[in-house]
Length: 74
Image (cartoon, rainbow, N blue to C red; front, side):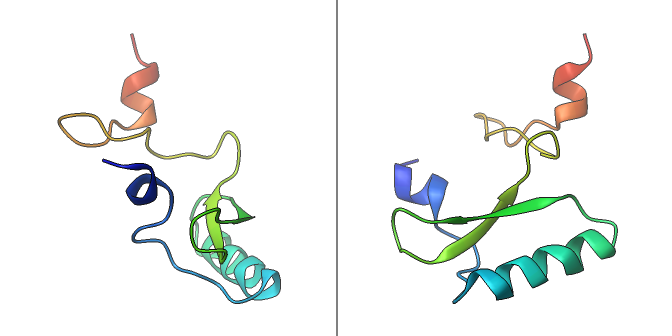
């Protein structure tokens, strides 16, 4: 996996910070995790990323993403 695939591929590009924040509020209102907006270094658009402490998965491993709950359980 290269840096582009990890950082940008498959994510929704938003034209403005206002629309990105609106979508983040909609997701949160539907019971989803909390998101922050950030400007992508690859495409220059805005994307949504998990807010600190609200990630549901870690980076992918060889066998797919590891849920945070499983990772934290000894």
